Image (cartoon, rainbow, N blue to C red; front, side, top):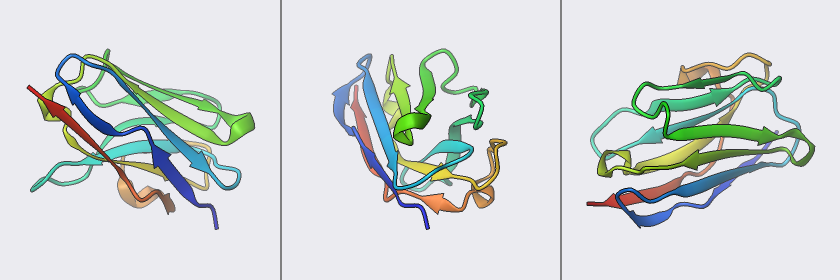
Length: 120
């Protein structure tokens, strides 16, 4: 069983940047970042394959960057030009297959979440 631990959330002003990290206790394959705002469904914001192919939701494309350091079993989400609409709990998720997915039910491992709050 792989455990995922997120870090790096916080309270920032609009236009600021944050970098989220997700440390895995073991080998991971495809990874994704999801977020859930109050009263809204959880949505995928970015995903990365085992080989490094990336996917982004339209709402974050050009502002967020997902990356991974396989040697450290760590995935990152660099978030720039943050907007109040980015406010949510951000979750890291891992699959047991190399291909990424935007569907949360395709992911087996989940972190506990980290709060990101963007003030206007």
